[in-house]
Image (tube, rainbow, N blue to C red; front, side, top):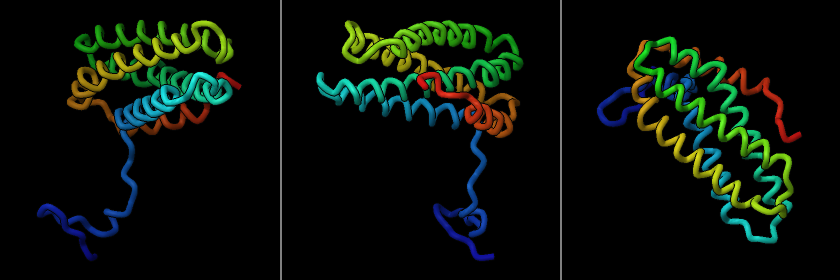
Length: 169
């Protein structure tokens, strides 16, 4: 078997081309990055781009809904089972989700030209940014050091996301 080298490490060629399993934290961080990109696209739209705004916000709401469901149904219970040292982080995250869900429901029932629409999108973006920062800087590093099988959990989470219908449809 031929190998590829890089930084003094030989990687078997067959292994270098095979996709690596995605772990739960990677799944969540990819979601975070995708939603951040969507919010940035929204910010770049002009005041008259009502159809584009509505379409983008519906996509943001769909992605956030799936993400929060997967976290609450699978990730948070798995992390909570690791012990009391994770309890406060998970409790705070669940409360943050509840607040985001309220804004999501409001946005899905609104038109892009409605009063406070853009303001609600901005507040949702700020809430999500805060939530993501706490997860990525505090929770995820602690979970990575735990005994949790993140690859198996990641598979479950990906499967569950595929089963969740888009709420905006």
